[in-house]
Image 1: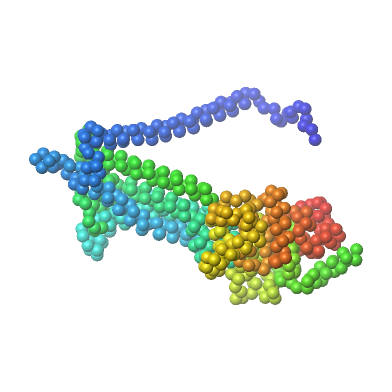
Image 2: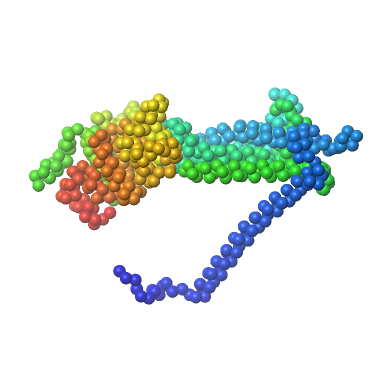
Length: 314
Length: 269
């Protein structure tokens, strides 16, 4: 078996065609490079812009960082006799974290539970029925969530639980429904990566379906579930409109779930139209935006880190 | 020649070498939906033997293997007729304990399928699902099973490391140890070495030689040399039919059926 000395005629290619193919390759390559460059440019500019605006509160206006973060009094219009405007945002940071964590605490078990139902318990009709429902929930605009919450939830809380209705609780419930599809769909994707061979291995040892789900599939999917919940929390932390519509937008520190409150995002959306760029009040909003940016950076890094550790396991 | 004839008669009349069968398959038909995959298979499995199932791809040998511990139950649309008698009782009969069947008739798959857990937790998985909680007993089972699977010395210092860090051959021995941990009577193996390199393959083959002292083994293999090396009897499947079953040397030296001869001489498959 020796190769023929000359190439067979079919293998000869037209030189002008080759030139065209080469040119097309170069063009495609440049196009992808350009796309990446645009994305990088956008991300870097956003970071630079938000940082420079957000930090000017402290470097230009000389607001004390600690007073800003830990202060619980927010009064941009306090008179000079009373000591001038104060910008303490602790109540908003607190509000953001409380609604985010509680929303995740409600949505995580429901989301993971329904994901298990869709993939393991009733993979046929369960997914056929629930997948579109979940996709629908993702697609509903946040203003619709907020409006529904305002119309149904707020009066319900006022009449049956107490308080004004506008409350952290209302924000928590609206957010938990909003992040439910995120958690569910990422959990479904995670569960689908557990190979059928592994499941068959468990059944072949005499495990029941429940044992296989609980002891094997859940454990194998744990890193993916954490990722799902973090993505949900990132969405909850960044959601502005729907929260703002139901949370009451009080600038005071809430003492119970039934108190009205504010989140970082709701303060920004409530106030951005009423401030003049370059003023301290406007810069303070940018500082809040900076906190949001840093938090979403933390969320992304957490997801990456867990993803890496998950890969080491599988 | 006299020896050969005797062995052939023994096989033909289902007379066991030790006289005792553990599984008797009777007129087994299997359908995937409307498509029939197994046709009237009659086959006995003797206690303490290594029985090899050979045949070309798609001949039904793996499907047949999976009927022996009812793993085909997991696939939608599978229908089974006939009987698989395990110590005289039909495992497809009413009121059969599926968990007990699968526990006592273990299975090793084609591709090593360690669970994404530690080495220890992989082995302890079976005993734990069957209710053993005592740490000391679990430790003993883990050590015994890994020793039986010739893996203990290689992993004893890293029992709590992930099983996914093991090599392919080690993973397959881990999976065998995992099956042994639930104290099966019969071990079914579905081409257990087809995803392994030659050295790992020969270690698994050696292991099978040691295991047959305690367990009955039914092994599907693509590799006729492997069947010849490790098995006591060989069954040849073609297009869903059991063509011929005989003591391994008999089947390879003096096949009775034309199809068997064609296959083992490499004319198809």
